[in-house]
Structure formats: C-alpha cells, structure tokens
Length: 238
Image (cartoon, rainbow, N blue to C red; front, side, top):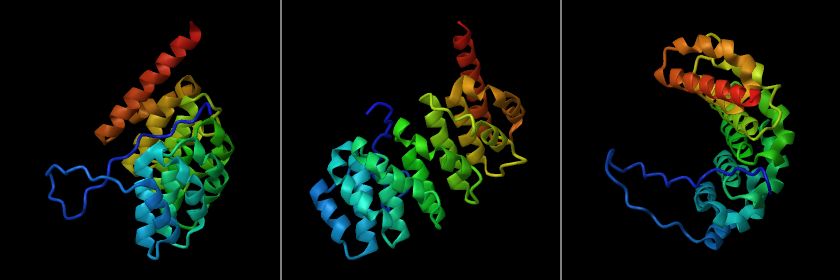
C-alpha cells in the first residue's frame, strides 16, 4: 500500500554481560513459526516480549505474525505490550489492521507503551493519518520519550505530505529550552520540523533562536532543519 514507511530491521541487542567495546557475534533469530508459538503460549512475560522483539528483528519476513501480534496488544504485561507495539511497526503492510488499536494505546496508562505506539504509528504513513490528532496531543505527554516519539512520527507524516499543520506550532515550541528541558526531545522536534519542509516555514523564528541551544546535537538538528525548510521553500517557488 502506498505510503507505508516501515523502518529498517533493528540490530539484536547485545546481552548485558557483553564487555563494552567488544564486537558481538551475530546471533541467528529463531524461526518465525517458533516465535509465534512463544508469543501466543509463552508462560512467562519474558518469553512473550522476547518473542515479539525477535519478530520485530525479522522485519517484513514476520508479516504472517501480524494477527498474533495484534492479539497481544492487550497483554496484561507492560513489557509485552511495548515489544508487540514496536514489532507491528516493522513488519510491513500486514500490520495495518493494528492501527486503530495502536491509536488507542496512545492513551495507555504506561508511558513506555505510549512511546512504542507512537513509534509504530510513525512507520505506517498515510494509512495512519487518523492517528494525527492523538499524536499531536502526545506532544504534551508527561513522559519525555513519548513527546519525542510523537514528534518523530509527525515528522515522518509531514515528509510524506500529510497535513501536519496542527502540529507545527507545538513542535516549534518544543525546540526551545524554555519549553522543553530534555535535549533529545528538542532534537526530535527540530528533526521533525525539517522533515516537514516548507510546511514548517512558520517555525523558522523558533528554530533560529534554537541555533544557540546548549547541546551540540540539538544545534546540528536545528541547522539541518532550517536548511531543509529553506530548500523546500525555494523548490516550491520554482
């Protein structure tokens, strides 16, 4: 389906006992059918969330697991819901039926689940347009990671040409240190505005003010955003 923008398959996480700086050997993932069984029938929450994480790493090769993953979005364990929500954003168009449930999870009582839902929705592109209002609301979430994830998702939507005008004023404020104390959220907001291109022209004054941000990665994101917005505006005038 046009507009789907599922992210790349993530690398397997190194075990906690791994020595820092030591190269890690690639670990073969269990086959998808085995993981589906663990997801559906795992007695421990660890078995279920581990299976969901491995399915995420399989990417679109795990498309057949979409129904099983969707069924686990209501798992009683928070970590399972987080892993399942994220996995759905990486397995392709087969996961599109999960969009309404993921939209509902933006109101979950757990911040990690809200973060994962926003992360997944950002990968669905045009089919996830109905989630736009709730993602805009998530820019005011009490959890910093949720604010950053919502901004990133909205930036992806804007890059695809979806109407994210309702999000621009709020994201413009998030690039300022007075409004947002967490540097990684300010960076996410700046990157999102840059992806929106000329649609974020109204954010230029706030971005220019953020060129003096105390954090170098924020300053770099702000500079890149200003260049993208300027470039988009020039193309629009041609």
